Length: 157
Image 1 (tube, rainbow, N blue to C red):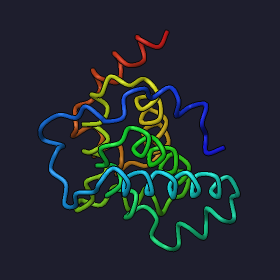
Image 2: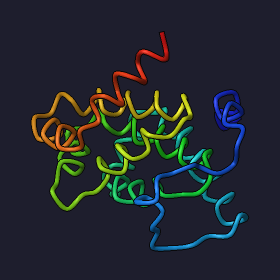
Image 3: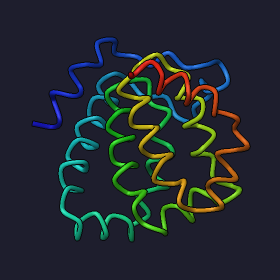
């Protein structure tokens, strides 16, 4: 089923990202991005079991998800955000994301500028989970996304 109900909301196939976000280390074909989407969907379904998610975290899942945030496909980015949201309940994830060398929180801030509501909702949930960790709060504050968050929350109500 791969969360088809939520993914069908994402009509356009590609993410409209700011120019600063467009740099990617790797370039994938559409077929390769589709395979990545399917793999991420399987991981999301497997992550519904807490024990399996904990094992995924031990295999450095967060570092893989950071690179998946720059996919062209909205569906792949959405699946990456779903998996990242599930993993943010662990302190290890917050510690890794609050590391100065980690660029995931700045990437989330740039993704927050997209017009897709489902993507923004996932990012808000991730940032909420990370807000319980002081180091993550500092990094979120550095991004100055508070106005974007407020606009996103106002549009939802």
